[in-house]
Amino acid sequence: MASKNHNLSDYDINSVPSAEGMKVGIVVSEWNQNITGALLQGAQDTLLKNGVRQEDITIMTVPGSFELVHGAQKMTKLPFDAIIAIGCVIRGDTPHFDYICEGTTYGLARLNATQPIPVIYGLITTNDMQQALDRCGGKLGNKGDECAITAIKMADFDRKVRQSHEIF
Ligand code: DLZ
Image (cartoon, rainbow, N blue to C red; front, side, top):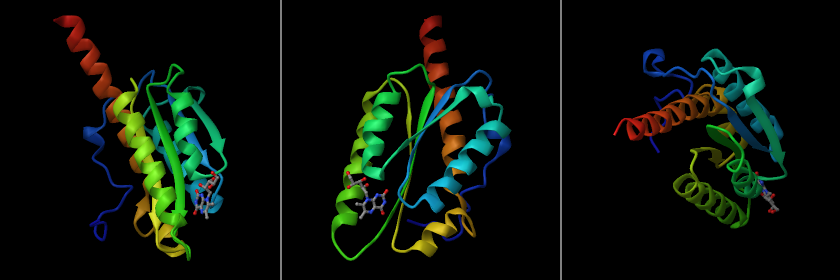
């Protein structure tokens, strides 16, 4: 993926719709907590900065990234406008990395396609700890920021789809 020149925290403020009244659920994995905690902080700060109220943000934790799918699925049953799933998988010596990445990614993609609210992909998959640090507030920005903006944009997308349906 071409992320060399892309800072994950960069966004055009003029392209961000109003987040007034939006309710956002965040499910975050405990594995690699030094990374996922920073991603969570980024997501929360960016949601607040763009108008989501603190009381409208709900944070739940799961043990590992693989459990994000179940956690996110449960949260899609509650009255949120978007769910952000945050995790970090770092490559080890065995193929376990590939199975966790694939299962989690497929599971989240399936939820995103089949549930009535958007499920935002906040899973970092890296070869080593440094690459993860670079993406949670390091030299490549914070993927949590990117997820927050995506959540707001997708919740707004759904709002607009609903409104257009009411009109016609
Ligand atoms: C088992 C495991 C391993 C080896 N590595 C990670 C990781 O880098 N990041 C992560 O979020 N979770 C890891 N896990 C835990 C799995 O996601 C999962 O929690 C367990 O396999 C139990 O289902």
